Image (cartoon, rainbow, N blue to C red; front, side, top):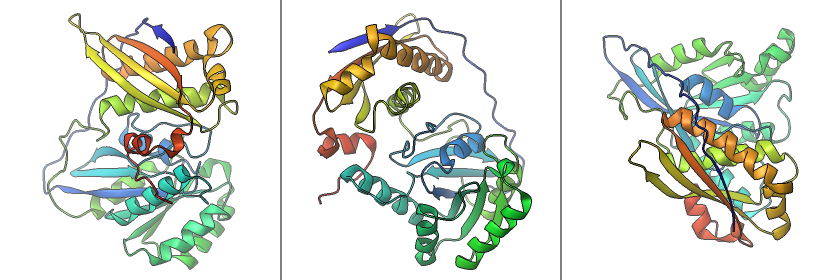
Length: 320
């Protein structure tokens, strides 16, 4: 067992919710689906206005459905960030794809996010075909429009709408925010009238212990790039509020082999120290309190076939 602690907390950032207008309220669930790395998590964080889903350049970062809650005008929009849909090869892959399609079919509206640079091919084409059999109203969102010529965007939108009857098409950049206001205005009016599902100041239904684990997993991905593949998982094992107002968090990074443990630790512990520092900093900002973060790296062979790990991730364990 190896651990690392990073204690140097920094001031937390302030956040402010939007003013709610008078009149009838609207609410509903909106599923974000798309191929891996289409930008779903980045768009979710942009629309919610806060970090609720981890972002990485690596594909298949999101493993289970994460709900981000946004208030816009009189509407509470509950976004469901689903795992990227792709051709599954492992048990974990199958669980992720099943979770994504299940989330889509449970929503009031479906947003199909398409990477405009990659276009409709491969997994994106498969998803588009699969949406033909889904009854919920569907919205097309073309992302990364700042990287594609306008005439190519129009061709892409036309092709998608020939395959699926989308109610509306929006062109956005999740990174810059371009087009996101128009999308939010539409969703706020399109969702049915009804009471809100969550308190006004709640931005996610993810338990804080799980969000903390996800943040550390993001830093693990960002730090190690291609060195450590998807054979890693993070769990928050201890959360202790201290009398001085700080919090002590203990997390375990599970890997499958000793060689992967060495990668996670890095030479002289440099990798685990950098991961801990980045995670602790972001957790301090989110919690608005000093965080004492202890990371442990443990080897657990074949954790990807352990039903308990799937339950921790909020996924159904595929039996075959």
